[in-house]
Image (spheres, rainbow, N blue to C red):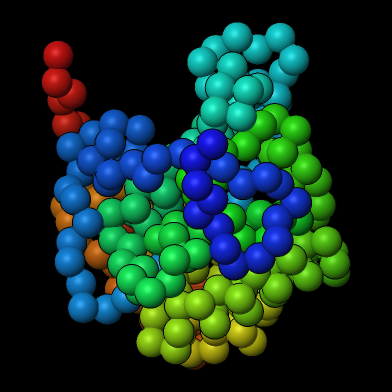
Length: 250
């Protein structure tokens, strides 16, 4: 069994982890650059995929035989890969972006560059291996501040994560900041360290996903601003230019 990566809190799962993919791995964005060195320590919190959609039903289907569903059935699929399939472009963009630009503090052994917010499993590294039953379990609550099964594990893990990464590490939320469901519990724990990309304001999920994939290809990060004081709403920005297609090796 692979060593456990997660040390920040007890989990409802037996956490096993897949090998960490490089930013240039074809499952992220083909041809994307390796993470750029940065003097600033930074981790990313990724909002979860909606497991009530059509793609979730496909991967959860009992008689599904496509490769990802088979791997999920035996616990060989990571949480990041699972949510990337279920959510499509938006989560795939978030995951690729976090893997390209994260710079966790070297002393924080339990903190990964991409930590996924779950509906009732707290924070989990994107590399956590899950089964279909695990995925259903951590997604079984409503993502709402009125839902204790969502809020309490998230606050618990956020506090432990804040202690582990220390006061100088930035925490960037890659998720909705227009509603309080993520902002309220995270802001009271991380305070001014909680940031989000200013370019997210006014964009829909698909536009955000496409924007992040373009950033990974170019190696240029978005502009991070404090959640506490920034304008979280904005006018719809212009349509993104076409995403460069990078050919894969034969």
